[in-house]
Length: 313
Ligand SMILES: [Zn+2]
Image (tube, rainbow, N blue to C red):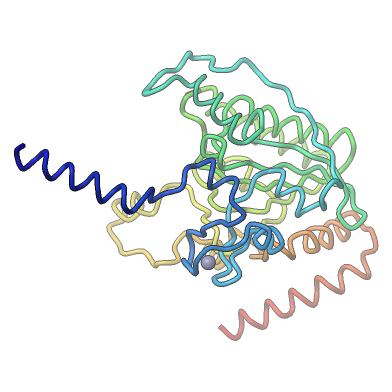
């Protein structure tokens, strides 16, 4: 027996005595507890996180959520209807890299229980009828391909047909490069669709969530009449490192956070997840001239306090 086999045997013994170190994925999913990757204040009950709208109680980090979780918070559980959107031909380029795009799609569908990264729903918030869309980051990084573009446009058409405002919760890294030009073309298509919404005088409200970047920021996401954002979320086009290398300047640590982007005028207001529903419905009531007296009062109060804090800072 040489020293290598001896060392390996000792290693095996240690491994056995410690037992398994990391729980499997299935164990993690079935557990009542979840570990947060923000301030590391230890594990937290999943039910507690749900009650807290998936916002960390210690550091206020707004964790990423799925489309259904988003609609549950925005409309209330079982108070909305998911609208089926068309599914175009999948994998038009027959793309294969380390694995095939078809395989990636299959895995993403299983993981998220969604057909594509975008989901569209209709429902009421504080008595205002709304068509809403959201993107799930867990579906191939929330990237936009043909199906996602189709879903966003379908949502616009639905809003126009039913004369409702369109509220969108974007996230994701940009266009899906497994679909190359077809994905890129959806930047133009979604932009044109939003223009149609505006021609019909329907409000389009965008609520940025973490992280929104690339082609998503460069198309439909930045065209809202009003832009809200969740605290601390990343809103960017190119990544910070790329910009830093290009301009050869040190960028501030909060560069591309919602608060930074708000300071520079691309976002109108940073709003906590729990207040988004009231803020959006209050704004829509004014834009649609419904109960404007009541709602303009609440909005004025919050905007006044905003101005005061800005002046103070
Ligand atoms: Zn935290």
